[in-house]
Image (tube, rainbow, N blue to C red; front, side, top):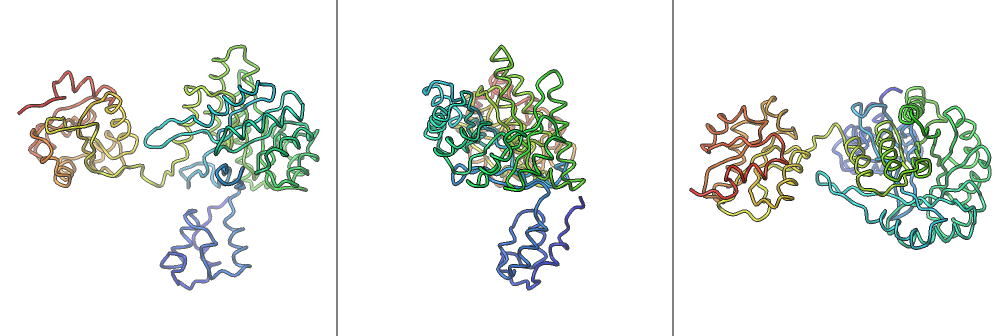
Length: 463
């Protein structure tokens, strides 16, 4: 698929340069539309026909759709490139975790609360789970409805997936909760009934087949009733689970984007929760889930349904998601300046680092977790890490001098000693010449800083 250009979009705009959209020119607005920084509806001068043409032109080859409403809404799909460096990947894949209708009611409530409350902070962002998937294993409509009721009651802002192959059981779940839950799985045996039901209640529908080619007739059948579809080509559970599953996802993405095969122009869905029943060991099952889900985040999964709530198993998945779904066109940086770690005073050490987001949060986090009181000078390296900025000439004595002068750190401390990263050892002399401060070469890894500062006697510096 050819990359859409700003000129393609500009030709459909009124070319009035009125500024009503917040841009000075229509060309600027066109560029923002291509980069998905604005919406066609932001232009008040577009007539209905032009607006429709523009929306069609800008629609990504992978359909974007929502699951849930209000606080429970999550967005899936919407991607238009095979590789994130070509533009960016949008809409990080939501992670749902299962509860089952054959669990005791207090177990359903407890696990739902774990899903709701799960969070971990990494490089300044709080990583959370996105949804609860209620699975029917009893085939009993009343038990399924009760499980859905408990899961909804114990979750505040989680999207909901209803998982059963029985349309009657699905209807029972929808009687309890109908705010656009995901209905799954629609198979060759129930496709007509579930597709009609999804259309009647305006809910997204997940299609499941054993392989990629088997999805096509399901899509054709479902499209007669609804266009809010997700595609599950079948998770492979075995020795080649990662390779075979990610190959299927890649095949779907390639067909949709490069070959413009419309039947595959929908988000993909991956389930790892069967491992909970295929493995005889809880830890082994969680490990296999984590392994497969992490790989699928890298290879085009748009939604994941897992079983485990073990933090050690979920963290790799959420970390992969965070990394892959940052915009490669934008530097990942924090504001340069002076940061207080703990409760520093005039004798506390002064450390220097770069404004690359990951570097800053690793350094600050390691110091905070060790209860180190210090001053942290963050220099502007354009969002580059220490070793890269040293090699590229951004980590210099002048850069350190500039942040010292701008922050007035000399008024905060009585000493003149700087601790620079071990990877910046090559610029020690340059920093000393530019600033007039004594420079101590610190550690290569920020996790070793607290012990290093104590060993070197820098946690309390006297004149």
